[in-house]
Amino acid sequence: MLDHPEEYYQHYYAYYRRRLAPKVDVRIVILVTICAISAIQYVSWCSSYNKAINYLVTVPKYRIQAMEIAKQQGLLSRTKEKGKNRRSKEEIREQEEEVIRDIIKNKIDIKGGYQKPSLSDILLCQMALFPFYLSRYVAWYARWVYRFTVCREEYGEEEKLYLIRRNMKLPQAQFDSLEENTKQTFLEKQLWLRENYEAYRKEREEEMKAKLATDPKMKRYRRWMKNEGPGRLTFPED
Image 1 (spheres, rainbow, N blue to C red):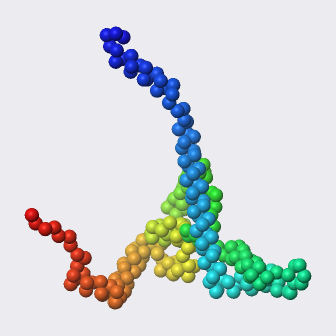
Image 2: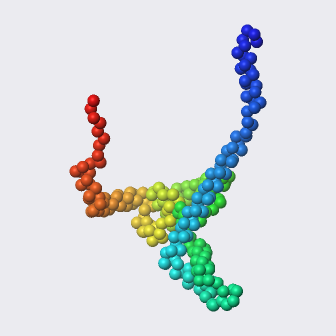
Image 3: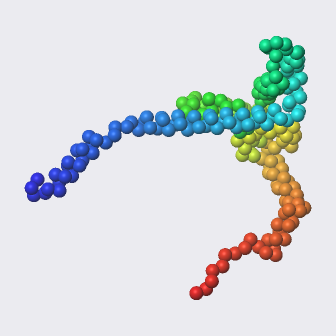
């Protein structure tokens, strides 16, 4: 030790570093992180869903339908109340709004990014259910190959819509949010066939180009780009 005193301090440091280092299980850290992300996901989805409901309550079409249902079910009672049970107009209006809101929640199926949040969609549940989802996908894919590749069966409507969504490269939630008449148009155009979809895509691109060519805002923008350009940074020469 006297010949190499630096080794003494190295051993001393290594010993106390092991003794004093915080003993934290990495698995616990990962689990807590996943739980935190899942909680943030769920709160965010609930907020988006409530925003969608608040918007739908203001749409006359859905509001009128909800009021008709409420009247049929006797939920909007406007009988005059007397004595202590008498409520103010503000309280009656708040109750009506709550009734309309509940009916819209129960009757309207919101699709896409504003759909009703589900615990099974958060990260924690998705990771826990991953083996189940994987086995289900393998079974589904094997059945698909057997039915439509080996046995040469005709596609049903569900299979056609799946192929259309795959051609369009749309997430399931975004495709589900499309109007039913839009999906029916896709089926009529046979967009599950790759060549039909490519022709449809090119047609849509040409329509968009023609629309932009006649758009006054785009015309002004093109004139500005041609005459002035986006601008340049110049530096004085030394």
